[in-house]
Length: 113
Length: 109
Image 1 (cartoon, chains in turn orange, blue):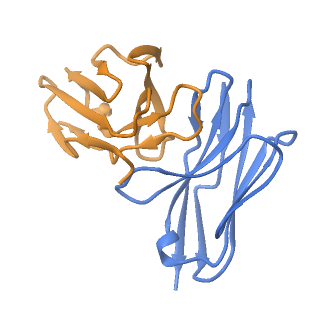
Image 2 (spheres, each protein chain N blue to C red):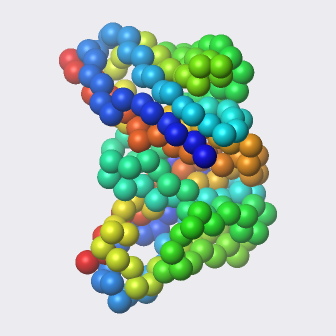
């Protein structure tokens, strides 16, 4: 238990569906991150929020839309996804953008059919 | 940008010592991290190096040589529970972490 929770843990959705992934951290951190982890590929940074402001968008397609209503919560809204978007989506947090280690949640295993 | 290279798989025996290497090419270096990730679980922080030398933490140690763009993670007295993927990650001047593909370590009895 790292203090970062994610729901749901597993999600199967069709290409026309709209769904949201939720992340919550109980560590009092100010920076939160979304990563994508695909088989045999490195963790890829998608979005960064620091003090609720988005500071980075790593050329992520617009079918992924992040939302950070406060420092403890982070959402990833999904719509019209493609099968190649199937992956493990990991949320992480750190004290701030320049903080040392990031603490990861358990991830949401997403399958797009 | 960053380019990080680490072996895909390694095997070792319970009680042994194993060294997992990581090499990197970077346009700006601001620290190197090692994470452990068990199958189906979150990556967990193991170590952080920003200066050259060895950092020891129990059975795990991490070494960094900035001039060579090289790090290793040393695991001693291997246990079965050490079977996991070990991720090397480099932080740049903007504090962005770039991860390697990970090294899958299998510890056998």
